[in-house]
Image (cartoon, rainbow, N blue to C red; front, side):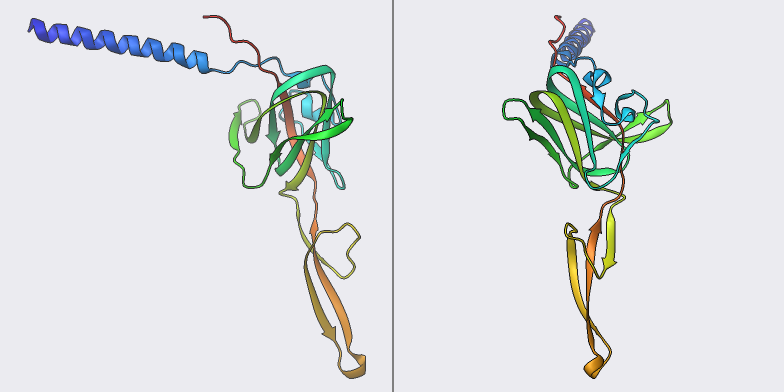
Length: 207
């Protein structure tokens, strides 16, 4: 009986140690982030950095871009986008040295995203969580696909229209026969984002 009690005590003690170590190891792996830099940035639309998930910033063609300018250079390691209808985009940052926009991250339509709960607004909000590494005073989100996009049929496409299909039909007979060119073009709709957050890595608190 004494041996059994001793064994149980050893097992309980070992489990307690494992749980404690696991907790400490987990805390070491936990990422630490700065305050949200976006809250002090000048944004192209005030709705995207007002801290309110119920407001929505919408952009139209031809550009469909969102920009943020920080008071000073920031090391950017994480950009979180709380989405409304965007499917794909490019995340760009301003390179002062070259005087040009550089691509920091690309989200295509096959990339994953997760849902986050906003209890304040009772919404399930799609969230894009981008891990990046660059120093800049400006970032840009350029939307390439949105759920509002679609297709249209036209006989006279514009110079910059994206043509996906070109079909030729004929109307009438004999000398009255007329060729008709029909084009299927891609139509860009309105892009909408609820909120954008920007963070830097910070040192983890000492244990």
